[in-house]
Length: 563
Image: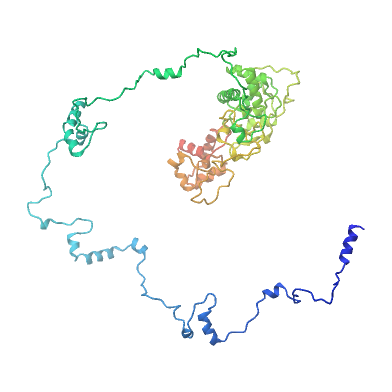
């Protein structure tokens, strides 16, 4: 018998009462009773008005006042009843604070009405009361009362008198005995005179044995220099003096920072501080020299690329360090190559060179060099280096000499709307954390052996909340910094243009010729077409890329005295 057959037989089975003559126990539910029938309210007959009058007193309906039967038929006048006297409308506060301006005729009429007042004659408005009629004839404006005091000295002489220290102490001790008796006041450290008999012992005598005290530090020297152990144990083993007993535990390769930030095994920077510090020092030195010696990133890369292959290997880096006078060892040079080689191909390309050996934001790339970098090049080696055919194929190269050094996708605008480009920012490890977790010190690479938060949990709230969109209307209690806060200089010296919503970034961003002409036309500066073209050429010559902003064009107009 299968399970399905068992279920079918169970459904077909029917209960049969073995004793039909005996009545079953329990109460049988009437058919048709459900929850809806139980919850349905049974309608009641309406209450007669005579009975309703008394029910309002004993059982008032929800929300109604209790009404006595004797007042059931009285009119409801209490709802509209108001106590007190209705006040009349008086003058408003605005008319009292700022009354309407009167005409000159009304002012003259008011002066004529007030001319008959006694206070107007004795104490006119804006002048003091003339009290000369009630004073004697000998009183004048120069009359003074009282006794003239004789000057005995200044306050400085009283606080700091021109006396010696001995004179001041002598004068202070003259009345000290009387002052002790009257005020019970003693000097600091002065003992109380208890009227003892000092004939046996002197007043300055002390009891007990004096504690030996030396100011040359002999006891400290004795406690620091322990005496040698001359009575040694006979069973002392013959061990060297610097021998230590016990098991020496090796130090952990990780510290508290790795435990808190969940560092990956094998990437702990503990114990490599000296090595990382040397690499960071050489890296900062090369950045400073590149910024001072070369006007652009392309010229700096050509100087480093000694073989003209479009990449920099360890030999090129060693030669440049020797030219700059930077002494490096092979181990530090290998660590520097490993730090700058983000993709791990053994050489440094242009993108890695701009990120790890230069301050790329201070050396933007103009349009002419962008075309050379992205479309092709004639060679990146310096002019004084002979280009030889390289037979060693083990070192990666750029292949053909006309291949681009960088792709157009790797160039980002320096500012929104600017034609200047900078290489995109890369790091040794792919970042998976949001950008708002990047610290300010890591952006300028100012820390040594800093931990990367790639794929790890970050703690705390960032100071500048770039992860949140700045609200359009900011609340007074919102203390978050959304990256749009002004510094100390704009707060202490705000610009007049900021009152009209014009800020510094609006004046220095590049604009087209039509925008410049429309802006100066709207502010009321009307110049001729020839003057405008000449000023535009002078302003475009100020920048290598030929861009013109409102600030440069305004300075040119002031120089040629056109505004």
